[in-house]
Length: 267
Image 1 (tube, rainbow, N blue to C red):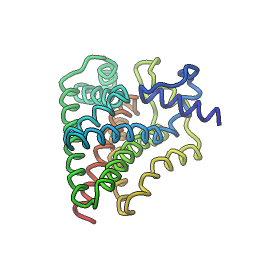
Image 2: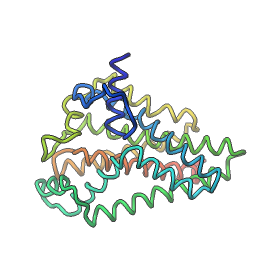
Image 3: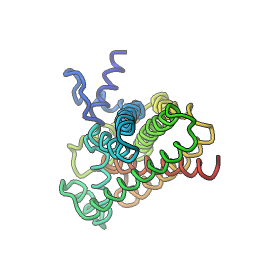
């Protein structure tokens, strides 16, 4: 149990800016095993985002609550996934060869494609959550039910989107122009079948609070994530840490959109 806790805390330190005990370092052995807990770490990010939404929604209003929750998620992760998404937009938008794409991705400067991508991605996230909360307000019988729906949605989104990164790590090859990349240890060895199942279980637990119809939302999330992975493989031969960040962000947005479609047109 102590070893598993260390693995979990190593993953928490890698994916977030949340404090961990001083004895937790960036051990490559523990970091390589940590992806099985990525969806569980997504629970934490989702719960923090919901907690901030709850406070601001209760005292001010829904729009400010959603904006604050997105900001809270960004601060919790240190803009980790958003940075990867922006770098991916710049690299694949401005590069036409594997070497150029990887060089742009390594560059710490933010370009036009990255700025445009971030604005569109954050805008889409806000509008989709706004629409979901508006719909929840119509179907919820009381505020407690409303908050439960929002909480489960945020937790499920953060969990399932991080599972997509775990699955991509298992299937595709890691590539980078920098041997010192922080994400490289994640790809040094694949997870066992039992460890992958652990990640899947953590990602699916939030769906126990939904109608089983909402499992349909997983299909577009999986298809979109693997479509992106195949695109990355075509151009650079695999994925990078930035690519995983981009997949997480797009998977999260796809999940919100899928839920909205199911609620509006299926149920």
